[in-house]
Image (cartoon, rainbow, N blue to C red; front, top):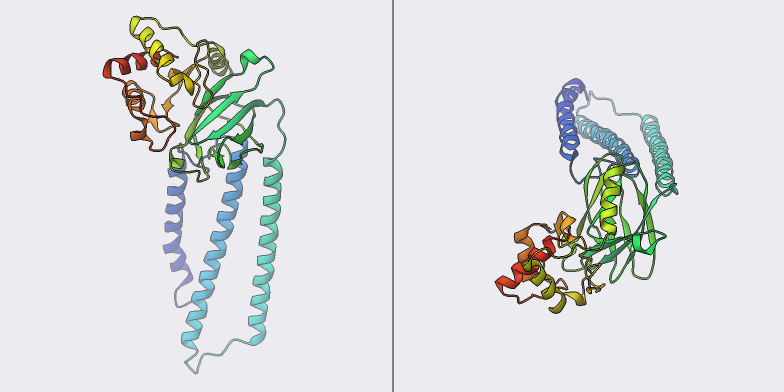
Length: 342
Ligand code: CUA
């Protein structure tokens, strides 16, 4: 090791390691990342991640240092003046390394066990939400003893900051997996079987979630948003979601509603307060209050909504919605009707 110069090696390596760590830390902040935890569950998982990262980093550096030392000795062994290392010393080093490995593995096992216990604990006073995974979107139902207050929405949930949210999940077709990296790890949704997980947001924000289990053609376009907000904001949002859909307020919207009810949209979509009662596709009662459409694929704005209704297959090939075949005027009418569903 003297040939390399221990100090020189550290002097060169340390800034590189520090720069890499800083980049990793800063690039995760504010993004969809398990390393930017926003709740107790993700905090536990990220602590576990960092513990493993640092332990493995130190072990890797030590192993590489030992390898360099072994190579150096192998080269200098050819020289007669260098004394070979005694057998006993080698045995001691190997026994020491084995002992350290066992201790490290034991520490990691205990940390893993404690993290698992904490993550699967049962929270008090949790908000109950049922989640249904479908190809390729998410259906969410807020539980309430009063049937009129059981809100159904799609691809976006709002939750109050600081309160645990229990998700009871199942799949309607194939296996999916729900993952909001900033709030928790992944949990599978399986047809005919219920899985649960709870998460909590400790600071307000919009956290992107996505499907984390390959589920077909549009698996990558199966995202959703978790909007964490203050109790007052959440209650206001929830009260609005409990209401029936707004009625059309002008002739164009009236025509849009009429078209919606007669052109086959009602076969799949539900709009509470109207005759549209389909349960195969997203509930559109408050569609205009959502930030995205097509399961997080597009921003929810006038142009995107029009393009999506005109030919959703162009945007998300293989999805279950057929092209509408509407002319320009009819399309405008339907879009203006849906844009009123705040
Ligand atoms: Cu659903 Cu991947």
